[in-house]
Image (cartoon, rainbow, N blue to C red):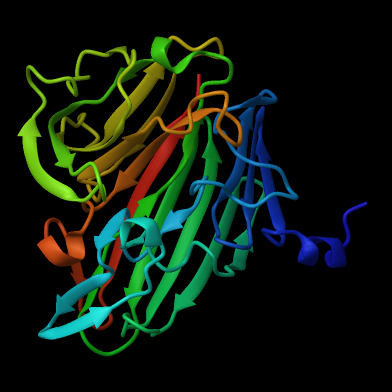
Length: 310
């Protein structure tokens, strides 16, 4: 029997579960992210156990910036700021400030979970954001909607990302067919994985517009200029899986997506999966300004992404 005391002692705190049809979703208190998502008892995302920590960003929310920030340093409104280096080996600050923080359960229905927290000023970050994320199950899968509201003083730089791993189960990563509807990819340096330049995908190893097996290509790559449907959404799709196709989509708020295969091999820790990360901006956007959102006091930003299982 799970007690309140036992939940408090778990690495990710309380476990909030919803079900709809054959779908089951588990969201956790610590990090406010997805621990597991299954359909018919089969993993849709490569998650982790109730008594484990998230590994390599699994299911986490990346706020107020996704990906890497060079030297943890940036200048905003004429003031230079220094964040803690959370990727010390590469001298970067990575994936924001809320991954290892407690989120509150604001509302829960039979098919939705709403979590939130207030991001306060801290070294390198001077603003107050009210953050709310809604996880909702429907016939077509999972939709995740996040809103950030600037409730403090001054204009706040802002970016959002999420880090779900789509499960590939026992399918070798080389055999997974990947479709990314992007015409541009971001080149990064080998040492620190920081932006160098953008390039057209055409006639490159990163052209997955028509869908093809990943093969021996190692991906930790951001894509942009994404083709969208009539609904304004782009979708990255994995096929060739024994469990059927799965897609991750993003709405107009998401100009970028990152595909990461580094945890897709059986020897890596955790259930095998390929990370498909919806992002509002690219790596190091606090410095480049590319697709960076600036929230004025009382201004908010909302974006939705989701997963469509087979």
